[in-house]
Amino acid sequence: KAGVTQTPRYLIKTRGQQVTLSCSPISGHRSVSWYQQTPGQGLQFLFEYFSETQRNKGNFPGRFSGRQFSNSRSEMNVSTLELGDSALYLCASSLEESTDTQYFGPGTRLTVL
Amino acid sequence: AQKVTQAQTEISVVEKEDVTLDCVYETRDTTYYLFWYKQPPSGELVFLIRRNSFDEQNEISGRYSWNFQKSTSSFNFTITASQVVDSAVYFCALKEGNNRKLIWGLGTSLAVNP
Image (cartoon, rainbow over all chains, first blue to last red; front, side, top):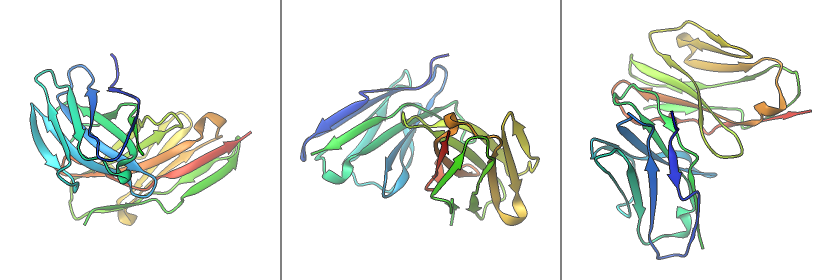
């Protein structure tokens, strides 16, 4: 079974631009979570989607948004990019229940110049 | 409040040494789940193990073993006879009850030198 895939793997943007990252979960998984990883803050939860609905959200500004499609694929968008948004963005998928194990994709490394 | 502490920021060992990575957690829930993930230089987080709060049985998987002790709120990870391929950052994480997000430790960077 194919793992979680994320595209693109690397991205370079400039301040003020916006960016969209994509995540395809493991086949059969209906929950997708997003995390931001930075050297200073470590891994921080962004949000989680299930059946096209956001079920949980972390403490990030409204510039960070996401959505999930009917096929469980998910996208996250960051508008008005800031230098501090440079990070590795990780997507994780799980079957359904909150107790299910999350499996991660390779991440998208975003650099904001 | 929920919290995961990995006190060891970096560990360096020589191949074939045994090494233990510490993880201490805080939670008020009686039902929770603990995880260990490995992050090699490629960046992908690789799931290693999950433990439920009601199951304190230790686990061994090849060279890896985990010691879960509720009395000390610890979930330590031991690699026996370490290998260079074990070099990575290891993260401990906590999920409470029906909460859907993982709370992460800051990770322990393990370098296994030949």
